Image (cartoon, rainbow, N blue to C red; front, side, top):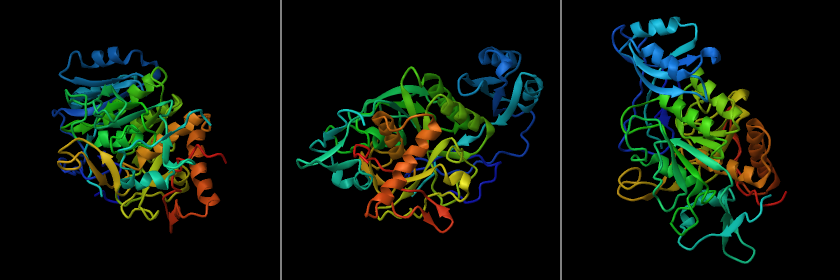
Length: 426
């Protein structure tokens, strides 16, 4: 469980969702001063005028034992490298270098109007288990009886996580990038597959139904089976930024959490400039997510968790300052019925209810994609974020239901409950 105190020197990236029994919770602290001769991992950010980052990285490492891990071209210009402090001294002195940051370990954290928009819910979908679909109006009663749900969004959603099982018949998914040291680009931990299903599990009678069923999911693996790093997160953001237009990716979900760094923020800003809205887990704590990333960055739609009674989840992170409040929203985050890999999140089963802001964020990602498809969400990413937040607030104010609950508990702000009923005319 995360501590409420997050000193800037501790940069721990964690899955912000359900219990991952196969992975330990580790708080990684960067030593104040690494040994001069011990190789460490670094992120080297170059100036825009530096030229081809591949050539620069090769030049920096050609006469040294340093190893380049990733090269960044779209979200920022630079590379990640394993090198000693002595080797980095010469790199740091190069006038083409803007700054260098220590790379940090990534660890999982245990956590407690468009045409033809609607379709009937297929027989076999276990919607009785999925209260979140009803509370957000992702599923509704049809005038002729039965239930209806959304059709797939017209835009793609990138899931930056532990990978996705693209072979699942319940997902419309493809491999985008593998930014880890793992040779397997697919998910073996189960978390990314569960997150992808919350976004867009097909309406095919497969049991679990996504908020935007059948929406195209792009798997961007940033968390491997062993130790992973923040440089992998930036690698994933770089890939999405570079491919957003060609692959029609307009939303990126990040159910991870880390301390804020300039390199990560620079990458997120570039992603927003490319027209991609980032939804991010606020985190499981509870704690104030100010200073966390990516949720704390103002370009991101941060998502907290609410329970079945529409009250803030006891372990959800929250906002306090106005800077964070204005880009915060909530979504169901307790007992979210997911489909995952066997022998991972759900034990020997492939389906189970799980808690965590990891599963709140992808619901909002799906709503953003649907809102773009409907034509209601227009403009830049900041405008789209505010439209989705405004829809949630207006739905709360315009109905006599308690769905959405209070957005605040004292000074702690969680946001209004996201509203997926975009097919209803205001």
